[in-house]
Image 1: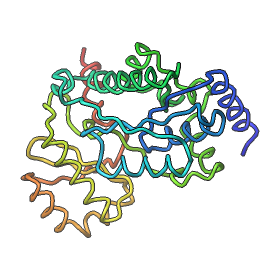
Image 2 (image 1 turned 180 degrees about the vertical axis):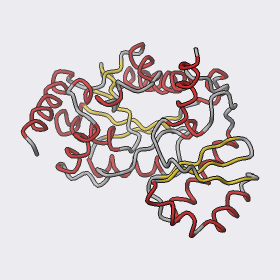
Image 3 (image 1 turned 120 degrees about the vertical axis):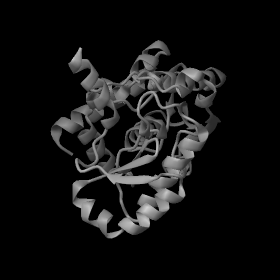
Image 4 (image 1 turned 90 degrees about the vertical axis):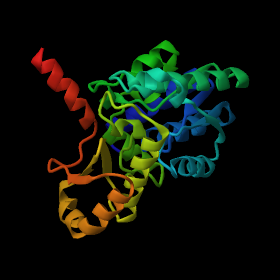
Length: 274
């Protein structure tokens, strides 16, 4: 561990110690898993991990998050969230993530009150500040803290610290809820969420670690790392057949490759034209 990372790690521990007790939303990604690990190591039974069971989460992620919680040793609760019951989430405007996080943080706040725990925390970090993340507004409104961000940890720091602490998912590819696979304005339904989940699961079964299945009405746009383009073409016939079996008429490979937050390009283009 570098001296700089050691300082940030100590700062994170101090922040959590000052909080005294905390409910942490655990998604199973490296950010929230690291936060749970350090919070549990620092606070022991005064840390509770809560997994939100959502239809907007890829299948298998909840099970993996639960397994990680058990490996860490932290007490964990699984609670349902109901984003699809909120019309403001379903219509999928640019502030969709705000409504999704509002639902999650409302559930976490209820759990915290039941448990007599004063603080809620999530895995936001220093690299999130420069991106368009309306969910951070929901966090502010619900008094949710971001200890990783407060400690100045970047994504690279988080992966390095997670590796140092022996977390098996230190290099897990980034993922976001399935609602991010749809262009703004596309109404999100249970059927569409399940469809893109099945599409991405198939790509993972073929060995693609970082892959997105972006829904564009009758077209499925696949994003993978550029070094994986050749492998996509090798499996092209099978991929096309599978995606068509899910209801798509056309299957396209994005030649730019995978990039986090690509669906926000439409917002940047709109702003540039104003």
